[in-house]
Length: 408
Image (cartoon, rainbow, N blue to C red):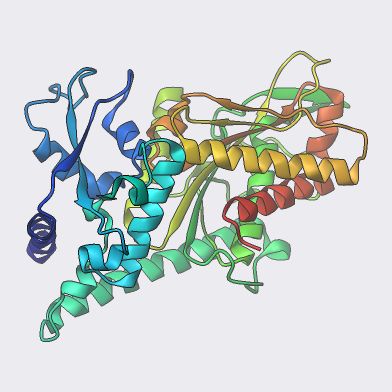
């Protein structure tokens, strides 16, 4: 622990000495918490929170809340660009320079940075985002090297255990026996099928059978998880049931035996249940987030409205999340194109909306919230009860994810 602390202190000193520039100062928006501010500026919460609190000591509420008209310093240095290239401007290697370039371009595209760094000659450098641990280890510090290697080994063991657990959830017939490609290597997905435990979610009725929201959302979730894993992704199924598996039945059995990935019982109290899942996502994210990885949270539900109200698949994202909005729109566009191709003339009326739902607001990774249809409507029910339709939904979501990440 001491060595880890020394590394962090070294990083702080290194970058503060090396970058003799001011920190970026900003005002929060109405309703902002620190995590919202960090998301807006593409800052990783756990890497920046301690330094942010130190920078802004005396400017926060007792619960570390933000004050609306107070100016706050972010862990982002404003450094002069020499007009040539980022590497020579900062005397850094290519990988870090590329990271800084992409970061500045992203914030400019989002409208957060007013001008391109090539125009105003100001680089925004989120200096705590870089994983420098391996670079600053001296060649003769064998013990520290071994600790880092051991830590990575432990993470690999967790991933392998999770992979095997997912295969059990899929069922013997549907297990992933072979990685088809590595398109999603170093991509992490957190999949949540809504409700579960004592809460079945919305209930529909068809041919004398009850259709429970959670069971159909869970089946699509498992199918999507399998598709992602076949492309080398690391997938964490947050709500899971060892008694269920990917099913080719139309009418899925009632359950209620679901638990969380870590074995915890799902609370019957909604606020606690939502916090359980979000805390688990954030814990896993903090373990595996590092430079070069990508993380996405996907929560899947089935809506419930009056019987004659047919609803196409629609999406929610956090209001301030440009990435979440982009993912939702890309998924929607992909599904629209699939319907146009497979059911010409049908039309597709899915929507993308902003909502500050608990999981989207409190989870660290970017989140996408998906509603598959109206469980009360007979036509929407066909989308849910036919196993080929559930597989098609999973396939289309998978293809939309690849598209959002610009992966061919």
